[in-house]
Image (cartoon, rainbow, N blue to C red; front, side, top):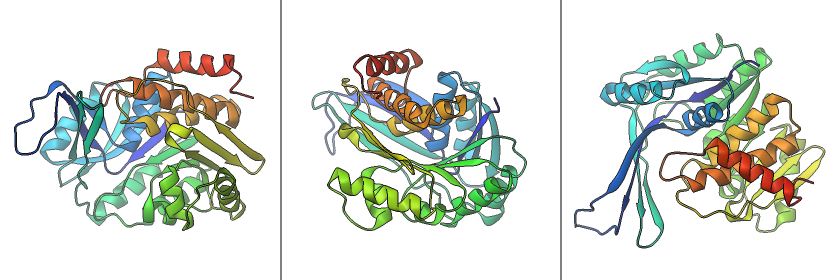
Length: 312
């Protein structure tokens, strides 16, 4: 199969650590510190590689921190194509407080990207050869809100299926002809449709309306502890998540999206791929900090879902 291409305009150096207690003013001593290459599409590429799928990561990076980011990504052995920018790649940080079980996440807005830089990213899309393009993450400053719509046009010209995972104005502008799949959280989906959706029937109806409008072919709506909802033109499927202890929520949604997209690319049904994504999302919360999911955990949880009859 062809590599699945991931696109990340706002990657980050993701730091993670643990502390006994997080308190204001006082120095907070941390342990178990680690640093990973992150950002939506980068996380998706990391998970796809972990699960045995071929991938190519296209991303913007620059400044002194861009070099550090490149070193971290090189260590993963992911095939990559960097689009250089002048400004610095952002650094995010997550701290797990052992005394409370709470996790604190600090996420900068990211660099200022010049027009020539984001247009170079679009030009790179015209040169890629793939069947699936996963555009994931926030847009950094300077990038127009309709960037993902432009990326979708580039994908459509080449017959590439666009998987889109973003939020707010970028999601609203990005949906339309050529979008194969979107994966919003409930809050992101409510913002997109402009109303609260507290009831399951309301969530399904809104997703069907979106699909009927031509905005996307598939909606995979993540619901946190309530699992996730899959809606296509042919129906809806709701699955509860596997019961697992939570160590970190970092990258759970990215793990879900990576596994689901990869399974579809392998030729599995959308419903089966959705369940595989659920297993990967649950596996991610088992891992500390920014580690994301492990393949053995994904396969085990997926097998457990099959055994208990979740995949009907």
